[in-house]
Length: 140
Image (cartoon, rainbow, N blue to C red; front, side):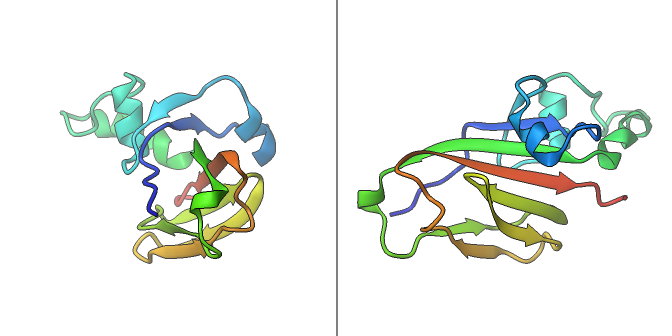
C-alpha cells in the first residue's frame, strides 16, 4: 500500500525563544503549506512576502533563509493494511532537517540531494499520526 503525504501540511516560523517541542505545540502562527514545495512558495501564497522574482524584492525576503521553519502533517493509517515493515520515503529534505513521527525522532538529514527511507512501523499508531519536520537555517 502506498500513501502519499502531499496534503494537510502546515508551516510555522520557529520562535527562537521556544523549545522545539513548544514550537510544534504552538497553536498560533500555523499556515497551510504545499508539499512538495518551498517556504518561499508558502509565504508568497499567504501574502506574507513579496514575490522574490519581481524587481528587487529578493532583498526584502532575505530574512526567510535566516529562520528555522516547522512543518507538520496529520495523517491516518489502519495498521491492518500495513505490513511488518512500513517505510516513510523522503525524496528530498532541504539541507538541514530533523523529522519526528508521533514525537519520536526518526531522521536527521543534511543533504537535500540524498533521498531517505525510514522504517516507521514501530512509530505508527492506529488512526491519527503526526509527522513533524524542522528545517534549520542553512545560513546559520
